[in-house]
Amino acid sequence: MKNGPVVARESGPFNFAEASRNIQVRRVLHTVDEVTFELYGVNAPFLNALRRILIAEVPSMAIEYVTINENSTVMNDEFLAHRLGLVPVLADPRLYQFRKEHDVPSSQNTIRFRLRFPSVNKLLRQGRSRTGEDLGAPTAHCPSIPVYSDNIFWEPFSATTNAGTFAPVALNMDQSHSAEEINTCGEAVLKDRRMQEDASSPNAARVQPGILLTKVLPGQRLDIAMEAVKGLGQDHAKWSPVATAYYRMTPKVRLKGEVNGPAAKALRESCPMRVFELEETSGVLKVAHESRCTLCGECTRRLQEKIIGEDDSHRKESGSEDLFEEPNCQTVYESHHVKVCNETKRFMFTIESVGQYRADVLFGEALMILREKCVYLLESLQGDSESTTTRE
Amino acid sequence: MESVPKSALSDRGLPSEHRNGVHSGTQPQERSVQVEENANRSEAVLTFRGEGHTLGNVLRYMISRDEQVQQVGYTIPHPSEDCMKLYVVSKPGVRALDCVKLALFHLTQLCDIVGEKYEEAFAETAE
Ligand code: SF4
Image (cartoon, rainbow over all chains, first blue to last red):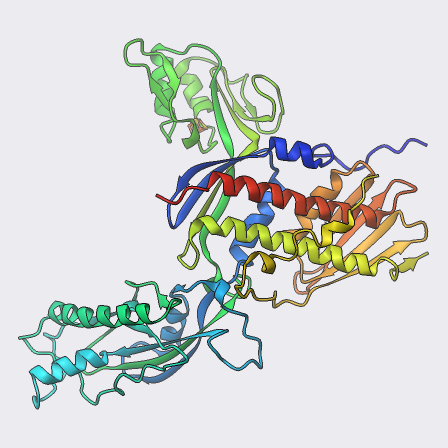
């Protein structure tokens, strides 16, 4: 009996030696919060698994429990809590454990933060300079004061910073104190405090600074305690450690011969991504920025053909694998002059970190999680293999 | 047929061991896998809990590369139910479950290779 394959095989059987020979990784962009790299010799399902893991399964810390002690601003408690949840917590998630339902909050599984506005230090300074003066009621002249995430401070478990209970003084705003003035004087104090905390602990936690949380008027106050816990992006996007993680096949743009004159001009103009350029002296068309191509196909559209004076009988859309130039290329669009292809084995992978991880460690984390899934299943199948249910 | 070496389960260990001394959380989701086979074991249906398209598609792909496999597919019967089913038919005389195990093993190898090459490429520090 001939057993014809029912599986449409996408590539030959996996072979360790061959794979380790073929697979290549090339670094393209490498900064603290973004990496781009080119992968050769891997396949889309594998990369897609990694992309999905990066978005939904690499754990990070985020604010989950918010206790509002005081909120006299116009922003509703629940809105504020939601905004706080989305502020990135800059702590290495690998240092913490998941907090299960009945776990006691501790430094192992929770980071405590506190937001007080006006901050205690600010109030003390204010109090010193303007003691006893009446607190001006908000007037039309009073600017609203922005509250940034810079005001959120870490409260370590061991030595809970009781640096002054909430001072019973409200921010005094009159003409002699501009908002900037207050902000700068506050900032200096805040910086001091943050540096002390950083110095006192090797794994000091903080949140991404510079994020606007709400705006308050003089006399309005905020006192909020927060707890950040470890979680996964699949539960809520606030736990996703990446802003984006995506991959694309590398585009290839090929001219089928020398193009010059009006045709060259028309082609150059046709591309919204400015892939083509004209050779300065000869006016011959050349592909200058191939990687910019978005595979839109504009350069092969009928409109251009009209200008160029060709019909579009050569134009093909999508799909056909051919070996016109190189193997592993899939033609997406084709016209008389141009051919736009996808290189099916060469991928560009881009990861933008939110800030919890350095961007270059994220990919390794995703790989480890995928690997762990496989090892876990291998182990459970190994144990399982004798006790499987048999169907008739 | 190539089979999964015993050492595959202990050679590199779980990722937590890579993270020298650093706590790593357990996956909070409950995971399990159930296997149903037919009498001659050339057909298997695996029911996964705690896994979805992330593993399903890549596993399907890795299994489909195996020449001992005739048919493979996966489905998530209903999105509100945490359940992913993988269906494998192997050639007569080959146990379908072994093809799944082999694919899982190859996937760990692929992770290792890509991880290694990635480390090499990113050995220098960020700009
Ligand atoms: S398909 Fe053509 S027009 Fe579109 S971006 Fe690529 S080169 Fe430019």
